[in-house]
Length: 161
Image 1 (cartoon, one colour):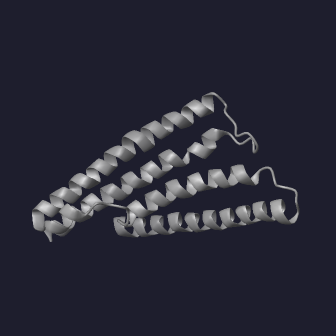
Image 2 (cartoon, one colour):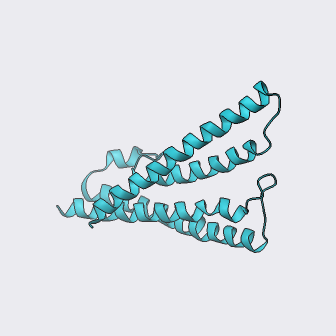
Image 3 (cartoon, rainbow, N blue to C red):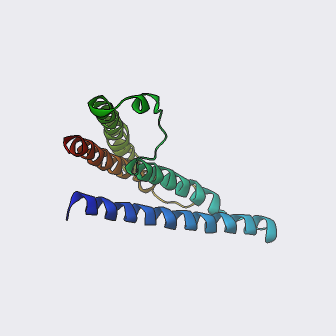
């Protein structure tokens, strides 16, 4: 399996997970509104569940968007450059994003997961281990790292061609 087909499959998996998460979040929030305003008996877990789903949606969505090169960026300088200077700048940007993902998301996120696991912290209403909720941070970081490495290889391959 080539890198491109692996990336395509990974993109489809992440996109599918995002679609499912968003659909479940819509159902959850709809139930929250219905139980509160129609049935006059607010559901106790929906607020916390939607908060955790939003965390997962945001982190996984950020990784997906980084993989599509659609992330928010200041592109004044790259638009003015061409050829090798542009390629070097894009590689530098990819390396900086990779460093951030490794240091903050993977290492820092893993540390957060480890600490919450050791302390056995649980969410207030759902009683779900918070380590489970926070696992999306290092997972997203690993996805961002993969996507940045793929982008760097693609930049170098394009320049050689």
